[in-house]
Amino acid sequence: MSIQSFHPPVRTLMGPGPSDVNPRILEAMSRPTIGHLDPEFVNMMDQMKELLRYAFQTSNELTMPVSAPGSAGMEMCFVNLVEPGDKVIVCQNGVFGGRMKENVERCGGTAVMVEDDWGVAVDPQKVEEALKANPDAKILAFVHAETSTGAISDAKTLTALAHQHDCLVIVDAVTSLAGSPLMVSDWDIDAIYSGTQKCLSCVPGLSPVSFSQRAVDVITSRKTKVQSWFLDLNLVLGYWGGGAKRAYHHTAPVNTLYALHEALVILQEEGIENSWARHQKNHDALRSGLEAMGLSFVVPEGQRLPQLNAVSIPDGVDEAAVRSALLNEYNLEIGAGLGAMAGKIWRVGLMGFASNQTNVLFCLGALDAVLSGMKAPVHSGVAVAAARAVYG
Ligand SMILES: *Cc1c(COP(=O)(O)O)cnc(C)c1O
Image (cartoon, rainbow, N blue to C red; front, side, top):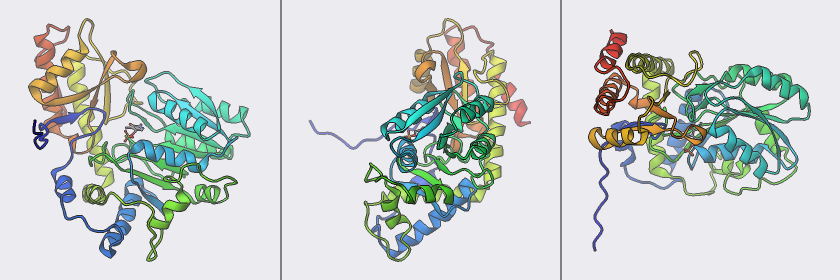
């Protein structure tokens, strides 16, 4: 047997990530690999930090990409800020809050859980009660955009509450960055991580992070060593923060960093406010089409993420068969439910480059055809027109 080169099919990616990658980014990625200590590469890294500060809307000095996916950014925040014995209040309203709890416990900390139903925002009142009941808590951790359910939480209010009670915050912005308003410095967020494959529409594999001075002070005055060598910020900074005297820590994923640089240049060209507005507009059109079809949203209005649309599956419909038909006949990927939502919802992503009018109309047309063909209880033939009406 001789194995041939791999040629993936061309899909439209409208799931929970990865999202469609802008061809400019793929082209950037194919440029020549150079050394990760090459002065030209170091210049590119400096630009990258500047571009990331723009994406996060922050002036934080310590802003950079971690050389691994979003989960590593999450882990970097927890392993550097949580020491054995620390108490962390963790909000859970979906899958990713559960991973935060797991991180706290693996760092030797204690997680105090604030639970909300899956599909709604984190309730600030419950958080305030937990902060009052746990005056010794050091950190409040929450997910800004819960990709497993499509709910957005009020990061500004939650951060202000934490600071009133002398807690730092760790925020998961993997799906919110570039898709929903996020102002890291204005809102005074201490530690935040994201991913490249959601609303930045870059290839997967990197995790932008940013830390406030308050967080840096806590990290540099730790009593114990960070248990992860790879994610220890004190060491990583020798490379990313080293100025002219950069030291080898690990080999940077050179070409993937070219990709992120290009993604951030594209974001800067569009303007971040315009990117937020585009995500909202395409969500409005998709919502109009889905509702005309008779499908209903899981998350209450006002708490919905524009970039991740969770809809209930109509009665009697084989949800996996629908996703297979979309993939096989239309080369269109939408997401299944995750965790407690498995089998109950579809997750239609409109992230980054994938958030455009063509995709919205294509997805609605395909879903309409597949569901109608299965005799599902939906109104057929009206979704596309309802979405077009939103675009005017
Ligand atoms: C996707 C996602 C992650 C994990 O990112 P990976 O790149 O898959 O490791 C974490 N949190 C949220 C909210 C996500 O959507």
